[in-house]
Image 1 (cartoon, rainbow, N blue to C red):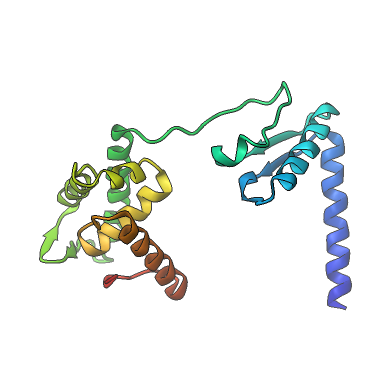
Image 2: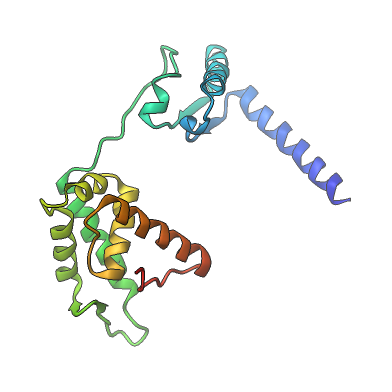
Length: 199
């Protein structure tokens, strides 16, 4: 019976989607085209997209891909608009860190209205001191790898979480990635991460 329900729901969803597409009312999002490992598969998907675009139905497509995987199988339709997400500038990183810290600081406020400072190893930091210490770690000339990684919003968020829990950043890229993986594992296991002991 449950199989019949799934089949019925799947059929209705299929019909609904076909209706939106045939009327030109659909926005079709293909996220991570480069994650198709086979070049022939990527080209096949791009060909399908271009075929639909040529019909002029009015449907819109949003396709995301890393640059390396996109070069081999780009959308060549003349109506396609290509955009590249630029790395975050130092100014953008500073703003991101400040806004993130403001959000964390609000969450740290207890129900009685008192703020509890986050303890890092050996040092108790308030919001501003924490943000300054994190920026100093990111811009450390001895560790340019961290600055390069921090120009990516997702990686910057992970870097901030690592620093938030340990009060420092690893000196080597491999160790930073290792800490990020541990953070993910902790998040998946506990739901809400409290991985103070990443070591």
